[in-house]
Length: 484
Ligand code: ATP
Ligand code: MG
Image (cartoon, rainbow, N blue to C red; front, side, top):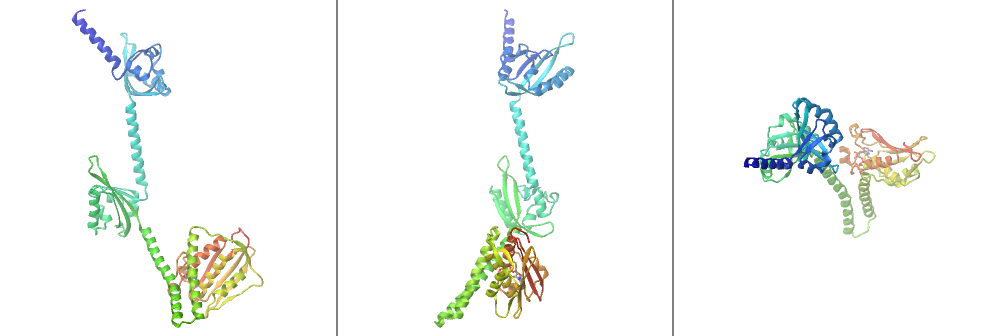
């Protein structure tokens, strides 16, 4: 062999190596798909021996069922028509039945007479590419989900540039402030949040954020209608790829309701403290008086006991109200004569100057009820009637009964209740302002009474004429488990 021949044969050998071992599969098939040649790379990828594939196997039989259908109905006709097909994705089923995602490029070779003679295909492993595509797809889905969460969130979620210029403004922000996104994006968030007044505070927040620290602050924002809105603002810095501050996200919440609750709690504490303190002051005064006179005084002891009762009642009411809030009223039902109970309560709650008349019917008025609780209802209604009546006003307790329910009415000739107040009367801690200045109380009596009566499946009605008097009527079912 001459040196040129030698070179040629070496070249041919190394071309063979290249053909066998390049990092892509080579496959030659007849026009019907029968495999005639396959390189080592493809064998290694699929796990087959060369003889497995070149003894009459067709390429399409290596594909999954959908792949095979696609090959025969689409791929092959297009190849016929155009002579070449590029980058079509298939899954080859490997010897171990695992799928191998691939991209296939084919060209069709023709015999001198023009008839197709051979299909030459290059096959690329698409495992990595598929997983990138999948990751991209998942990442995109995550991003879209997150965007949807932000869009739908009831909290205001806003993003700004590092300088505080609004970039995105969600529906929650539109609802909270009343500005549509279009008017706010591109403007400084401080115009809305710091109300234009407290620039120093706003700048301090931005400085914290620029130092990479998230901040939380409560401030007063400005709504589109010009009104103020109490908000909490959580600002979070978001660094860009280089680690510089790229954007700021702000989650803004309406804390108006919380502020209102705080105000009510404050008011309640002040009122409860006042109501608890005045009987204590009374007790102390009487005790001091007795000590100074160094004698036992019947009146003093009575007064002390009276005030102690008042304190105990107050504390009981507070405890019962909190139990009611937690939905725990345990009833001990027994057959109860309402006339008897009302009479006994009236005897204990009479005061001088306001007589209580119990207009007993001929016989008892029996209902299944909890004695302690129902007495408490009567006590609340009767003390109210007495408390909100002038001297000489008469309180009358009446009874009645139908086949389903019994009723007890407590009528007074007192100050009456304005129509506007009627719908709040049974609310926790509600007191009509004029009444509040006239008599002590914390606004729990009617709330508790209504809940007790409702626990018995009954109801309380009120009728009132301001300046003339009020009538509270309790209806209770006469049989267990029936609604009045
Ligand atoms: P508490 O009973 O807790 O000591 P209170 O009497 O003020 O305090 P409720 O019994 O719940 O509270 O009554 C609520 C309010 O309804 C009262 O403050 C008063 O303004 C009004 N009210 C209740 N009963 C009468 C009545 N008979 N006449 C006029 N106003 C009444
Ligand atoms: Mg009361």
